[in-house]
Image 1: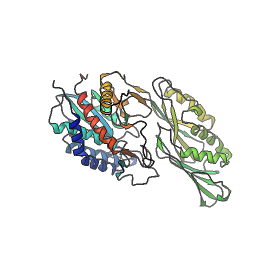
Image 2: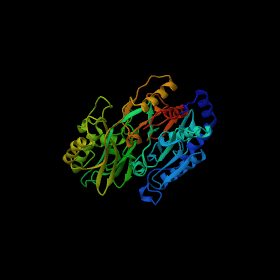
Image 3: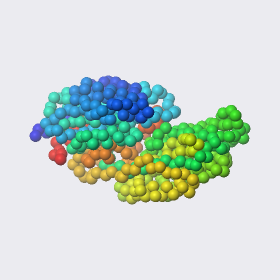
Image 4: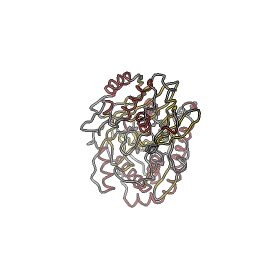
Length: 469
């Protein structure tokens, strides 16, 4: 079998030549509001019109780039560059997004180029990286060289909320021989923490001193904004940093807390707006006696990000310590509803977490509903596929990095032989006006994307030389 290889000169020339078109394709996808909307779901669009529109646009790009596109009833899609074998080296990304939330300085659905960065919802998670994968495949289509394995780019449309897209895929198609997803960090992630998300619902105590609570946009994001409507007088309330106090009429006051949002798996450097609001209400006695139990539970949920205040803290020799955050709070049918999102190592199970937090909720008059429970995912970092990815990364960067594990959940865990592979770089500072994935002003370094596309092309070439089962 002829060895597949690419040179540094080829990669640099290709990236430079096609980059304007890459940017145009990213801008096309960013312009689509592809938040899940099950209320508007329809045949062929099971996740709603936004994800379907983004899926269609991505498959159109793939077809333009010389691949064979396939729409799988709107659940998911894929595009192939056929090789000598039907076995596939695959890349999977997603076109659905989390709600944009508040705090943006630019239109989240317009890709903005500013001082070497791209801003817009999905530029980093995950529309931008998915476009890189399509153009990486196009490199080989343009070359005209038949590859040993088929290159398949899988286009997910339900990653942020339920992973129903890959459930559909795995029910209908054989899994790739190897797959990576550009939806995390470099160098290469070979393991992901388990995931536990749940909802606490209080007794019907809303309407007392606290009339309404509302905060957060998604359970898997740390909220940057939270509001409370309370029975009080503005004149009687003390000022507090990053909390707006305004008269809402009829003896009501609206409190608005401004925090620092981010991904649920990466709480460091964030500030939970719900927690800020809870602290203000508690410290100033702004709750009715029957609301006190829920407020006490809120203080425990918001009191730590390592789960220690909920008695679920855990760590092990493979993963970073457990994280747990409160993602959203709502007022529904007279009750307060609070979600939690935990990412846990292999030293604890989702069942153990449930066994600890369920009675805790009951102690404070709240019912628990488990929304998601996923075990940790781990692939042997010494496998040829993982070593190929890490060596490619190190060769391009001059570093000597090792595979690592993460707290976030990606598509990799849904496949038997897979990893997440970039494009973020750990520990690289960004300007204050560039936000994280799932946050306001989501952005990514343009140079990082250019470098990542070259790495992805080279990695695919090297994977083609492996004996894949």
